Length: 69
Image 1: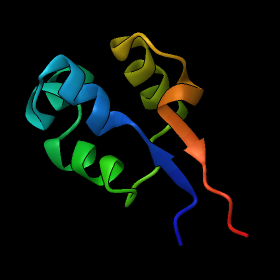
Image 2: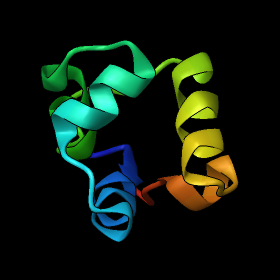
Image 3: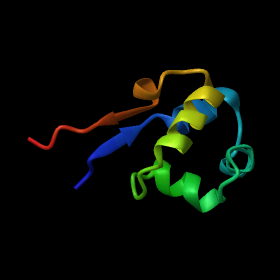
Image 4: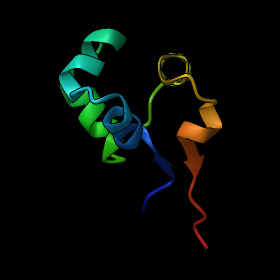
């Protein structure tokens, strides 16, 4: 059951950067970026804020809750 969704893949495409490039910038593994993009891992608040700042968007434009009903 998916609780959260995100636009990280879209934002990466907009900037034309790879998962590896983003991971290096965020100081996490490429697998972490992959897992976040595929909703297998929910990032910490700190990482979510860093990602939003990197992409120059608001956190709630990058991540949002999925209605379960």
